[in-house]
Image 1: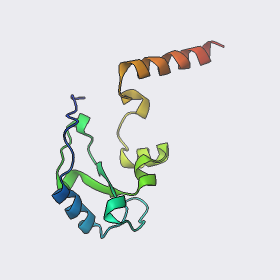
Image 2: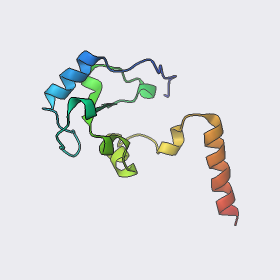
Image 3: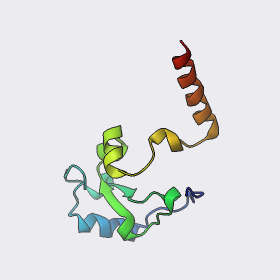
Image 4: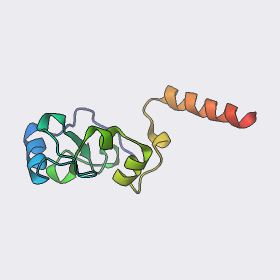
Length: 106
């Protein structure tokens, strides 16, 4: 069940440092060595699915793995719906749906 996401929920500095130290400063997907300032912190269980901001739910990633391709997204969330299913903002979803419908009509 999808729940309303509290955007104020971010990992604390303490949790970020613990997660970073736990993986020895390496990206958990590709293994790239990261400076703490360049590391990105990802929720293993997304907030909208009930995830929290605990150490157990924190994953250390490099920029490319965190913001990268659809393939990386599928590796991070193997059981989640496709990205299009939860793009934020009703207008954006509506515009995408209209564009898809128009492309199929031709």
